[in-house]
Length: 250
Length: 250
DNA sequence: TAAAATTGAATGAATTTGATTGATTTTTTG
DNA sequence: CAAAAAATCAATCAAATTCATTCAATTTTA
Image 1 (cartoon, rainbow over the protein chains, first blue to last red):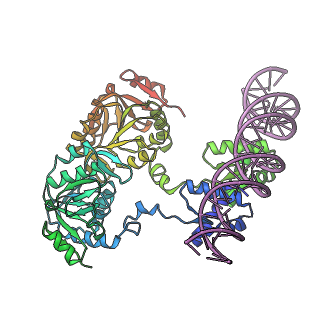
Image 2 (image 1 turned 120 degrees about the vertical axis):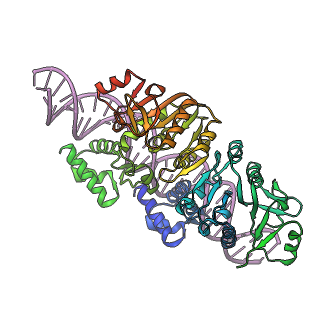
Image 3 (image 1 turned 90 degrees about the vertical axis):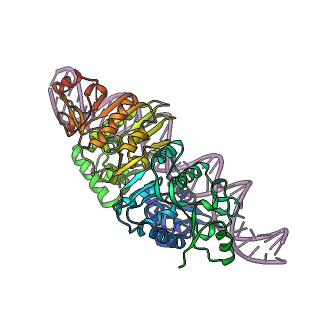
């Protein structure tokens, strides 16, 4: 039996069963364990499946880019709620900065304001924005492969040519002492710049981000209104002492 | 048995079975292994099938590649040839500007130079460039929905922060009097700017573009080397009197 | 007829395969 | 919880298959 035929059988079995044992592949293809192992290694390299002890598992990582709205994102439901609320803050005629990242991405489908202009540094945002016929400007700069965000000197320079009514920023940590933080200093500078260029700044942070802090500081809490789904009264009171907090309820 | 008939049989068997062993071809055609091997080599070159160890497989183009590289583009084959040649001009360490558009897009798969940096205003280019691990900068600006190109004041301003060893520009018309032209003045300005920022400028124009002219003027002929697949001697001589012309042969 | 192209056979090189080895991981058992 | 047993694994090897290349014989073409 030829290699591509075996590969086809392997992938087909995986379609049917999600997780398949090595021996099942051997039976289906009538060839040795060694051969199947080699096939699995190769297919794993090609990102067609994931090897697991005892066999192989289906991998649907590719959907991440296609259906950004699917489950691949953590806390997707919370992010959608926060996104929906944030989108409702946009008013007709606003000039908006939308930060890169999955949280702000969730806002776009819910935007209803007319006659707005959006500037973003998120390449993934473009497609969705254009689909809604929203005039979109992209910040220039270096493309960060992992997150598809635009960063670096060029991005900042490019950003400084604009000013905004409102900006919506995603963060990785919100901390009572360290303020808003994110792991990549390059991204932190962009977010910081956007906040300074905006009349009003909003930070979108689901409950998993609260009381967390990561490497690079973006801004102190009071520089932006925080939008979150956290419901712990005590925790919220702590942050409300420092800045404005909007809580989204399901 | 004649060559075209063998080829027909080979392709037909593949239609029926997806993956076919060498020996099955031998049986079906009653000729030697050597002949079949030669046939398979040739048919693979013509992209009619894919050789695999032990036989041949039907080649099923990935949908992604199909959408970007295939039928949506006119003169795809010529553009690939031109793209391949243009890509070979890139040298290790070059800073390159890649204009938006399908022709320049065809270059990317063929780029082999190491340690290069690419700046582009084509959003479609990003994915392909990043896949090849080429550090990529995106020009800022307004996103033109129809072509997914970045245009406008912001784009020019963003572009002027760089300078290039070489730039590769797509055009819609090449005319002995009007020079290089394109329908959208906004795009024309970008292309023009890129040419002025480059040590060497290359215009990619398949034969359908020659002796055509569209609304917005980019630059006179002599400001860029023209890369084309046109083979009419007389026509070429006319352009060669005005500028450097590189002709790609299939 | 001579030159060019095609064909089939022969050669050694390259690839694939299944078995075997000992190492690693998981499960069972005390 | 830990040791033993079982299963699975990666690495290696030799046999078998398949491959590209070459060359002479044949057919086609000029």
